[in-house]
Length: 390
Image (cartoon, rainbow, N blue to C red; front, side, top):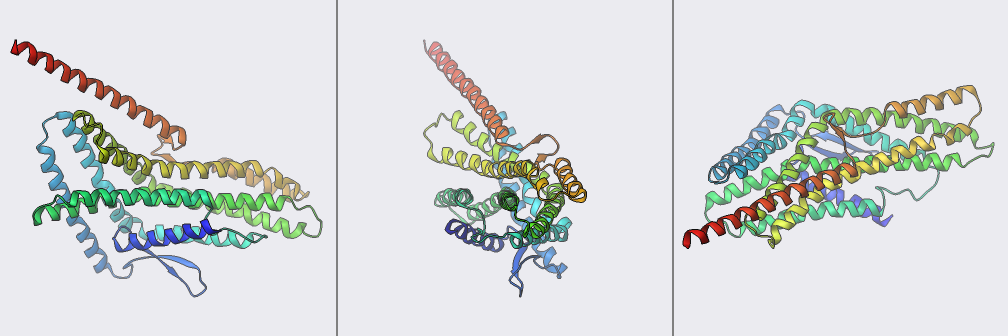
C-alpha cells in the first residue's frame, strides 16, 4: 500500500508539472462525489485555444531554424542525413499534442473519462479489503525510472546552459529544450497509459480468481452477478483501448523512432570523434534507451495480464450450470479471442520485449560496423600520411 500511495503522489506531481509546462491541453478535476474527471483546458474559449496553438509554433520555428543552420555546417554527408532525419521526425512529434488538441480533444477526453469510470466500477466489485490505489512495488520502480529519465534530461540541459553566451543563444537554448521535452511527451503518456491498463487487467484477474474460489450455495447468486459485471468490463475496456490506439499509435511510433534515432546520432558522434569515455553521451544514450524500454515493459505486462484473463476464463464455467450461463461465458471467451490486446504500430509489428531486444541488437551491430569503418579510415589516413612524409 505504501508503494501504491507513493506512485499516486508521483503521478500527481507529474500531472501538475505537465500542465504548467504546457505539455498537455487537459487537466484532471475532482467532482463533488470525489470522482476524478478529465476536461479540456480552454474548451469553451476558442480564442484562447488558438492563441495557445500559435504561441506553441514560435519555439518550433526557432528550433527548426537553429537546427537547420547547425546541420548546414556539418561536413560529413552521413551526419547531415542523420540529423536531417531527426529534424524531420521531431517536427510531427512536437505537433502531435497540438493535433490531438484540435482534432481529437473531445474524443480523447471522453475516452479517458470512460476509462476512469471502468476503474471505478472495477474497484466497486472487489470483495476483500486492502486494494492498492495504483499497483505495487513494480509499478513504483518503473515510475521512478521514468522520473529519473526526466531528471537526467534536465541535468544535461543545465550543463549546456552554463556555456551559453548572449541573449540569442539563450533564446535558442530555451526553444530547443522546450521542443525536445514536448516531442518526447507522447512516450511518457503512453507509458503511464499502458501501465494503468496492465494494473486494471491485473485487478480484474484477481477478482476472477478470488470469486471463482467461492463454492458455497448462499453466495453463488451474488458471485455470478459479480462475474457477469467483470466480463462486461472486459468488453468496455476493449472498446476504449482500440479507440485510443487508433488515435495515438502513429504518434507513439514516431516518438519511439525519434528516441532511437537520437541514440544512434549520439553514439555515431562518439565513434566518429573516438570519444568512448564521454560520460554525457553514454548517459543520454542510456536515458533514451530507458525511455523507450519503459512503455515496452508496460505494454508487455498488459499483454501478459490479458493472457492470464483468457486462461482464467475457463474457471468461471463452474460458477453456474445453466445453459444461459455457459452461453454467456462462451461469448465472453470469444470476445477475448477476437479482441486480443496487442499494440501493433502502423500494422508493422507487435510491441514486445523481444522486439526491443531485436532493435537494440540491430543498433549494436550498426554501431560496431561504423566503429570498424572509422578505425579503418583513420588507420588508412595515418599510413598515407607516413608514406607521403617518407
